[in-house]
Amino acid sequence: FDVEYIPSCDRLRIRFTNISQNSGTYHWDFGDGHTSALPDPTYEFDYNYNTRVILTATNGVCEDTASHAVDIKSFDYYNSPVVPNVFTPNGDGINDVFRVKVNGDLRECTDMVILTRWGQEIYSPPGGQLA
Image (cartoon, rainbow, N blue to C red; front, side):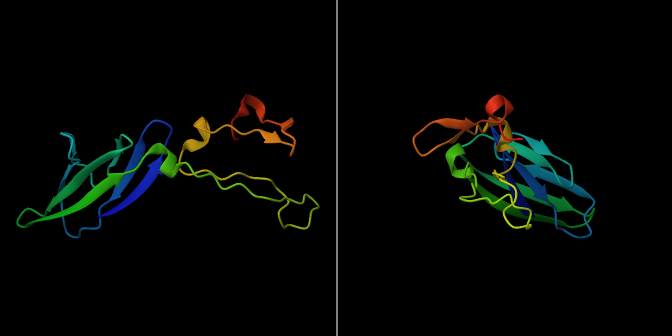
């Protein structure tokens, strides 16, 4: 199975994609006492948490198991916004829009303030948060 990490403000969401073939039933063990029978579940884990996720796929006759070590780092590890160092809104299609990119669903807990080099605030989006 494949995993996709989606950071959010409170927890890390992991989307599991089952790539087993010819299976009809699935048993996911998330290593914390919770399980799922969905083919492609999404599950939330706390930051700074380690576990092993196990998928058991069955086709009615045969059974196979795959596992993946989940080593979740701190919130700060996933919170690395990409901030452009220049933008030129001159309509040439290159760097015309100032856009800060954040990972996953971190917009809700990411504030932005633009300051001059002397520390004076010149812009803050409504509510301070990224749109």
